[in-house]
Length: 250
Image (cartoon, rainbow, N blue to C red; front, side):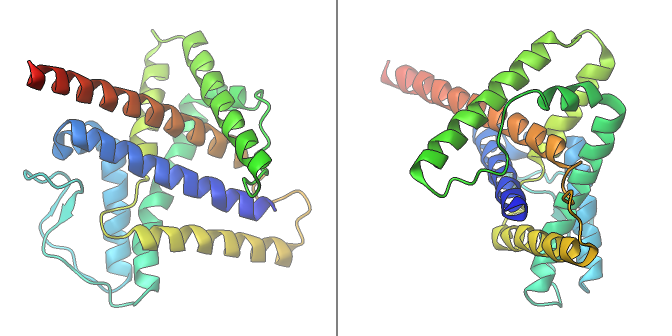
């Protein structure tokens, strides 16, 4: 059950990141969004470049942020992976893995109090919404996560540059875990492959404590961050749309 739960929450992270990125890109130019998320954009781009090279592709004229309206960084001439199916999974996996590793080290050096504080919230991360009661329990649990995250941020020292840097980097890295354009299926395949490999590894090593025991607090923290950003972005998009409607009517 733990492996299915981890796969589910990783999917939540990916789709929430995708939703946040697309909402922000609908409000301002995508190149501005990617520029504001520069640390995450850089990590995702490096992961994509490595994935392209590993799968036999070539990279020319690499740029982080293109001058047009594209939502994604560009890597010169379009290249196709020479490894069918598996290639698209690798191209999706490495940018997400790079962002995940960067989040881990960022949290370790700057955000330990935040991650530790998320352990205090009552949340059953192994509960899957496979029934109607479980679905509503999951919704209530995630809302409690977001509420607890807001309380933790408000209680932190926002005048400390370490805190501000950590929050900025976390936003950049979590949002840039969104799948690159045209590779959503590869991202889903990468998540499923991760769950299968983790399950096989646990069976081979006969681990009783669970291979995700140390990863869960950080995963829950990322879920809380992205759901908060998604809720805020939806509200902001609605307000902007309402203002435009009123102004156009007048």
